[in-house]
Length: 235
Image (cartoon, rainbow, N blue to C red; front, side):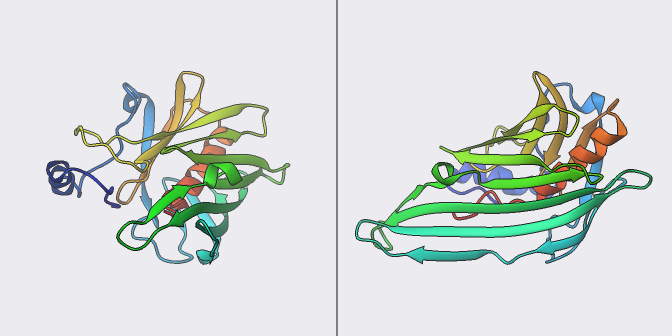
């Protein structure tokens, strides 16, 4: 699991002691309404390996290397980091979802090694994560995550005409320790949570019961994109 930076020493000890079982804190009452699937292929991550959970598999994985370049300037250095990836989300007797994503981050930095100041400019240049999801060959719809002032929030548009909020979760289950990077993401419709993507350790995907099959496979495709996102890109 990724260890959050700048945690107090006591909090860090608590977190490490629970590292083998740590998971995202689910919204109140959500676990009773949802099915949980363990994930393989997320952590540890091997380049090009499929991501699988429950009946869903992200196959035909096409990952680009993380690419970074820096432009020196008079006041500050500007750094851009980017990483593309694409896959096909499949499940037996369900329509496939083609997914193409591009994660990118911008930072400005100045000063020497001991007193280096970095400013995250990602939000001013567009989303941290921008994906297009095409269900069964239909027009691609966006999944976006914006990183701004320590928050990671976004939206998911569905081909059936609905738009859902994607909200980052920064809490761990059964501990007051919080993380400065997401421990998971919730896909919500108003006040109703429909899916939670746990990105801690091996990862889990939780889908609320009662969703239609198209909804389930589409949310599963979005979940795979969020599992593959590195929230510390460019940090």
